Image (cartoon, rainbow, N blue to C red; front, side):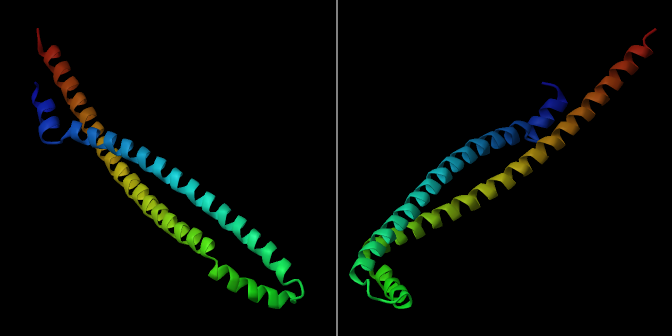
Length: 147
């Protein structure tokens, strides 16, 4: 193996940087998949909450048709707070939103790591272009020196 290639492998870690970037891409893909699933769960929970609130509104409006709008609104807020199904949906929603926030943070962190890897690979590419130019210059000087 030539000295420049050995230096690039042993000292600069060219393949190590490239392999790290590849594994980060795979990890990022997995995070996006998990994020998508969690966002689907959030949408389902929001829909379930809306459906349950609609059911409660219909039931309570039927029971308290004689209440004024302001009194009914106040009453309905209490009903929503004490409904166990809504409490369960909201608890699950908070849990899923926490997962989503964590996944979004992980995605952002991994994107930054990939940008650093990309910069390092670009830097190494410049170094290799420099080495190629030096080698080409050496080669052309050696051939022009021959009689």
